[in-house]
Length: 418
Image 1 (tube, rainbow, N blue to C red):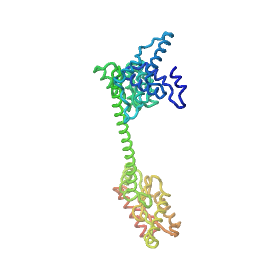
Image 2: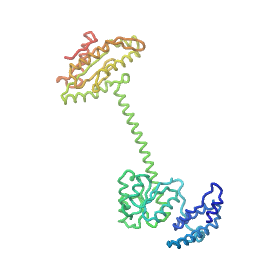
Image 3: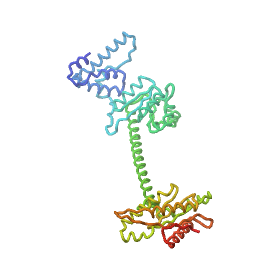
Image 4: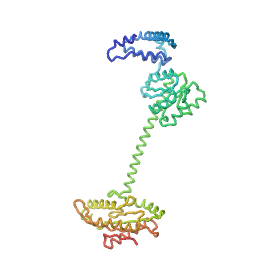
């Protein structure tokens, strides 16, 4: 009543009467009660309640509470006088303040006994932690999945899913492997503790719970949680760094085997991977053909119009080659104005047709570069894999000899190896 009267006189924005906190004091004991009492008394002082009158106010609340319980035939627990509590408060050991350097935790309390659950919840909240509660193992398991706490404090003896079963289930899922788990137990013999730790628990506290021991265990848990988080962050940074290195390495490999001007494969790629294509064709007994191509009189283009024009011509010619080749065909810039095309599963007659289409396309169109329209031609040598060829180099040599014959025969033509 006095709280209500004081509240009615409070200016706008003043702190409301700590009625609920006073009620909670009646269910706490020991150091937790001393610490909570000081907190509530500070709240009352901000409402202009005289601190010297506050113990008597609390005792009056308890007296009226007893009277109401007696009328309702409800048993009232014994509660120490707040006046006596105030007298010995200065000499009583106090709950240490929460460590400002260590951040608050999200804690899940699993306890089937309501009073113990509420006591532990209030104790943890006074230390500045966010607290969820569960009355059994199954409820706790669901909370872990949905709310992702950082630390779990669980009793062992619970109906349904007990503490040990809960821990084993949590350790079996990704969400539970990162949890720091503290077990509440009244049994501290070696066999019991061995089973607790083998199930996956990180620490234990014997009942009844000493507040200072609880806080010490929480600090240990905080250090482990912070170290695990730092480790995960470092692992994530390392993973990203490795991904970047992998991408850089892939790009470097592509650059090393790709012609920078035309975007086609280069001679290095051809010499490295064509033997594999040769072996596949040999083992599967499939045909394999090769085309060697050389742009006729290309040196004249560079000498008369400059290398910039020559580069544009090479790029446009590479586009023509792509137009007439399949995805499975390998097109390489072999050097300068010379190109190599490998045609898997292709007979000589078909390879000659492909070569003739490329030759005719270039001969019948003007290549435009820097405002110039140039008419160019190409000579092509064609060869097919034969039993006499020992390897892919022999096939390429046969196509190159056919190319040489095409140039000697007047250029702008296709010649097949004999």
